[in-house]
Image 1 (cartoon, one colour):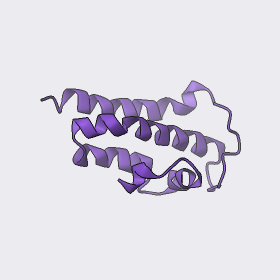
Image 2 (cartoon, helix red, strand yellow):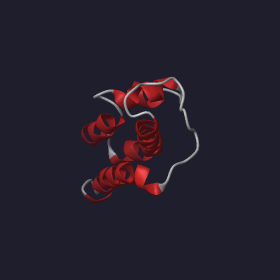
Image 3 (cartoon, helix red, strand yellow):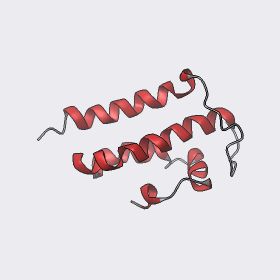
Image 4 (spheres, one colour):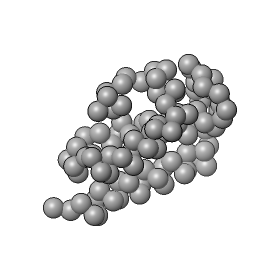
Length: 98
């Protein structure tokens, strides 16, 4: 829960390069969150994943405390992350039906 409660800032950028970063945390939520809890936190996960895709494109090898180019990039930069998020969201929508 502390991962989801961190406000946007340099901590979000630091986790983009960690093994237990946003991709890991989103996958881990499948094991820990109920569908109701997922619905309340899925936008936070999506935001963190979009920051991860942007940061890894802009600065692929080094962590930074600020985003170097804050303007939005083309869709192909975010496509893989959006597909991953869609898969996790569809697992909650289809597999965990009540």
